[in-house]
Amino acid sequence: QVQLVESGGGLVQAGGSLRLSCAASGAISGTYFRFNPVGWYRQAPGKQRELVATVTSGGSTDYADSVKGRFTISRNGAKITVYLQMNSLKPEDTAVYYCWVKGDYWGQGTHVTVSS
Image (cartoon, rainbow, N blue to C red):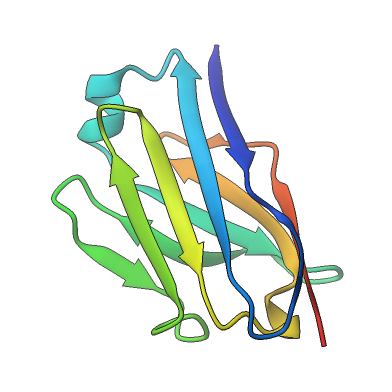
């Protein structure tokens, strides 16, 4: 069984920062994690789930246009963890954020609410 556990969500004022973490365990070995893309998606109320950021095993990153310059994705292979540093948060960033690992593995989601 695969487990992806997100943490770090919460309520923050516009302009503030949050750091999300996602720790993988279970059937996802450290080797699998290190050699596959991982990322973050989000789903706002009434909207479809959308990509926020991904990072490959080689460290190449990809970001949604709406978060470029504000969010940074990183990964720690030894800890089998992926992070999302979110700065200059906006109310439109309010959503449930999901961790993803290639192979269609998903976390349960963590809520991020940005107040204006």
